[in-house]
Each structure stands twice: as C-alpha cells, then as structure tokens.
Length: 306
Image (tube, rainbow, N blue to C red; front, side, top):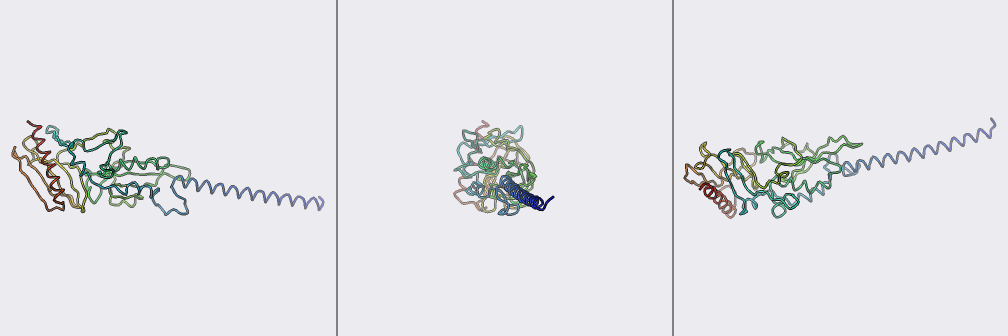
C-alpha cells in the first residue's frame, strides 16, 4: 500500500469517526428529550426544577380548593331537609341533605359550602380533566386524628397515584383533602388512617339525596373554632320507639371522642324534654336557627306518628 493510499484511508476513518460522534451526540440529545418529555408527562413538571416528592399541578389544585369551606349548615337549615325514623330497623334518615345538578354532579351550597364527601366529589369533578391522562384518582374513606377519630366517623379524601409509564413505577401516591385544604405526598398525612379505597362514594353513584344512619351515629355539619358540630338521633335510656328517642345537636372538641349536647329534645315515654347549652362557642343567631330546626324535625316526627 502506497503512502498516499494509507493517508487517504486515515482521512476516511477520521471522517467516519466524526460522523459516528455526531450521530451519537444526536442520539444522546434525542434520548434526553424523550426522558424530559416523559418526566413532564408523568410528573407535571421538569426534573431539574421539581422539588423532591412535591405534588403535581399544585397551583391548579389550590385554586380549586382555596374557597371551599367545611359547612353543611346552610343545607341543614333548608326547609326541604327533614327527618324520619325507622324504629323497626333502628335507623334514621335525613332527607334531601345532598343536591345534584342536571348532569349528576354534586352541588355545593353557594358554590363553596359542603361536608367532606360532598367536597371530595366536587374536587374530583374539577381535577379529573387535569389528572386523568397521567394519574389514577380514587376516593378514600379515612379516620383523621383531629375530628374523625373512629371508622364510624370516617372522613373522605382523594388518593392520586401515578399511572405506570416508561420511567415511572406508578407507586407514588398523593392525598388531596379539600375539607382541610391539604394536598401533598401521602407521607405528609401521618394523622390519617386510610380505611377503604373506592372508585366513587355510593351516594354519588346512586345520586342519593338522603343520608341514612344507625341510631346513635351522627352526621357532621360544621367545623368551627376547633370543634365539630354534628346531628344525631339516639335511644332514650336504651329504648328506641315512638315514645322514646332523642334528636340532638352535639359539639365535640378537636382530638376528643366524646361530645356534649348543644341542643337536644328527648321524647321520654311520650313526654318532650328539652336540653340547652348556649356556652359551646356558637353565636346566639346560629344557635337560634339550629334550635328551631331541631324543634321542627322533632315536631314533624310526632306528626308522622299520628
């Protein structure tokens, strides 16, 4: 092989080496673009600007839940909400406590007031278009150490988990609690005990306007000044019949199991007895409205029995 031919071969190899380096650089750039695009799709942000384990779409979620307030007071006091008792089965029913629009979506009073299940359903409808392509959203029944300490007094939140992708394992879970304006990774919810996961609460699936509870179980109405206001129907000295029952509002302080009567009417062997306690942090105006509502429900039960 002559010197010129050898030099030509060297030049060809050098050109090929440069071409291979260029192609390799292009491939690296393409892989990086695919990586970042996939990360963006699965996480809602770019990897170099994303705080470790932060919740996706935080600004959009905060905008949705910012104005919500835990209160069923307006709905509870509505004239079409009434009580009925089933003495045979030991249950009671609060009628028309939930409202739905023509599309079957939950309606919050004044667009912002509701209780936990209602606000979770409302938040679900709002965030689903944002999250559905990249995340699975489930409803979760939970106990919460502040106000919902037992499974019977369970709370409802949303669980948001990443779908499986090329670069994701689908094992990162976030919790959204519209009632307390909390949103973040599940490890930030140490004061919650998660009990049951479901696609949708039964009352939303069935469009149930009523709430049915066993005797002595309660329905939460309002959280205010670190106390939970609830409505309940109870037995009278172990009896639950037409002559013996209690219709009551109770106030339970945060982190406490036992509540105190705010206002109660007892049907004691057919004789009505009233218990009042105005010193539990409720304003005089709200107390008057609540008392009138309970009196209306009690009187309506007596009318139903005639």
